[in-house]
Amino acid sequence: MPLRSLIARLPYPTAGVQQAVGIASVVAMGGIGVTGSVVRVTGSGLGCPTWPQCVPGSLVPVHDPGIDVARQWIEFSNRMLTGAVIVVAALAVLTAWRILIDHPSRKRLLVLAWTMPGGVVLQAVLGGITVLAKLEWWTVAIHFLASTPLIWLAVLLLKAFREGDEPARPLVPALGRKVLVVLTVLMWAVLIAGTTVTGAGPHSGDIHTHRLDAPIEKLAQAHSGLLIVYLVVLAVFGLQLMRVGAAKGVWQRYAWVWGVALAQGVLGTVQYALGVPEAMVSFHVLGSALVIVVTANLWTGTRDRGPVVSRTPAPPVEQELTSAS
Image 1 (cartoon, one colour):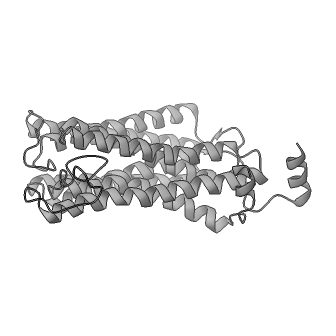
Image 2: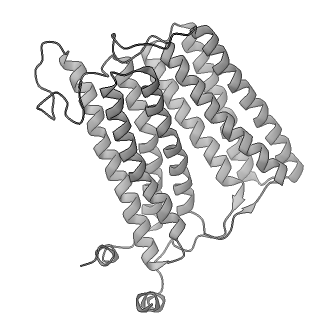
Image 3: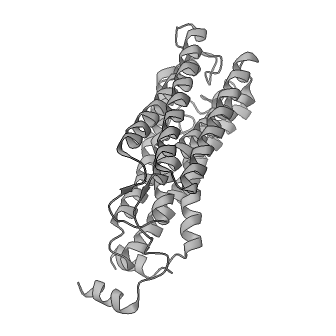
């Protein structure tokens, strides 16, 4: 029996289920970086020194006098969490595919859903390369940065469950859209700069890992400077919203970006002043994920794709015509 026929037998996902799958996707993709930071700050990056096995000859941790047991299990648990993320990604695809069967116009929704498992597989491969490269700082940076587009795409997927598939109608002027593009580029520039600070910082994931040979003070200044530029551009975007009298929903999304970005800036400043304590590193990584979420949320809130048509199953007649075609 074709896979499409099997999926068609599944119950049609309710609006609540669609939203739950979308939210779970955002949480799962955002959580990848946070759990990875826990591995790094606890020095557990090589608790499983090989990949895809944990140790040569075993997929699971085994006693090794040269490896701390706790660090073995921290790293192994992080790998196992990838399984949970894959389950969420698979649910996103199944949900979107089941919707497409009843509503053939929802192809964009399925494309966005497929980026979830595709991205997770890419992340797993990059994680393996990072381990095999003994946690070289630039491989850790690439591994983290690869997760950031997944968070953005998960937010787009969540929005897609709630909207239609008409051509996007901008809700801000053309200049405002250009400013928003610049804001998005700056967001990733801030993230990239942050990985260089991490690369030169004290938390490498393993005491024998090579670090970025650059003055961390200068790198931190560049990182914070880019955040300030991001905030300036965000203020300019606010002027564009005032110019067109943006809707309340857009202003709410805009306010969330300010709140999260400022909180992230304060957290980073305090973290640096206190000597980069371990727990604050993971909170800072969580903050970076939240900055992506709120920026993507603002992005999706500045255009309209029409009303959602897939909250409920298609009428029986429509389903029969679709099957016949």
